[in-house]
Length: 231
Ligand SMILES: Nc1ncnc2c1ncn2[C@@H]1O[C@H](COP(=O)(O)OP(=O)(O)OP(=O)(O)O)[C@@H](O)[C@H]1O
Ligand SMILES: [Mg+2]
Image (cartoon, rainbow, N blue to C red; front, side):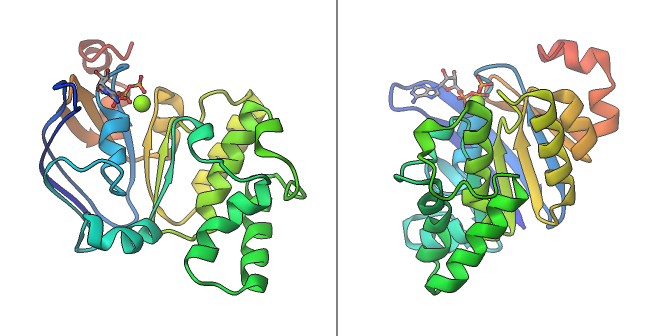
């Protein structure tokens, strides 16, 4: 379970990015986080694996997100960043995808197997030796997702997973995300994807949680979408 209790966050320049956020996400839920540009989606997601720490409590399966618990938290929560260049830093795609399971302590053979499986899941079979900088935008996005899948996290957190993907890659990504058993939390402007993949929608507006409910009710309600600059 993910618990966020009374979370406030100010960026160092003083800007209030999150105000009194309270959310509980149970295992198996599929949640879309939506909101206009600057609403605070990425800021909120970055609290789920301790990249940012605000005032309030964030805990994952009972472990509070703090410096002491970081390695535990990071094997529970797989985070796919908005920008793939924040995710891919090795000389080859294979090394990037191997990074997580190696850090988790798996032996070389198991790591190799996990890399192969994760790359196959995102349809990048055989990309092990490619340089991440030399991939297309959509391939980078899929490689980023593989770096997280290789760790088999309980919670998959994706920030704008469909941004920059061509229609076929987007469809394949949706099929992949639909298949995955993990609890899913995705920040997205792609409301069609949110409707297809999630059963719960949380709307942020200027750093505040303003709506939390069933995807069908929210995403098909033009008034709510309009009030939150989503139409
Ligand atoms: N590093 C930073 N320093 C100062 N302010 C920041 C920083 N990063 C984001 N912000 C501000 O915090 C607020 C929330 O930004 P955030 O990136 O979380 O929005 P978002 O909902 O993810 O938007 P988008 O849809 O554009 O990705 C915005 O007002 C933004 O300008
Ligand atoms: Mg964002």
